[in-house]
Length: 54
Image (tube, rainbow, N blue to C red; front, side, top):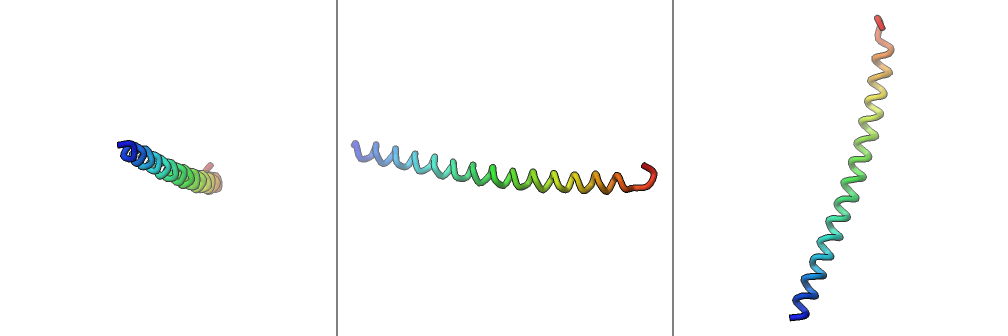
């Protein structure tokens, strides 16, 4: 009986570690996407400033 409890705790811990790693990867991807959106937004704003009639 104690070995099943130990196995369950180890399995739950491994699952939490995997979820934590996925969360860190997602955070890094979102950060990268936010930088790309920011640079595109700045480029669009600069291009709009160069349009005639403004």
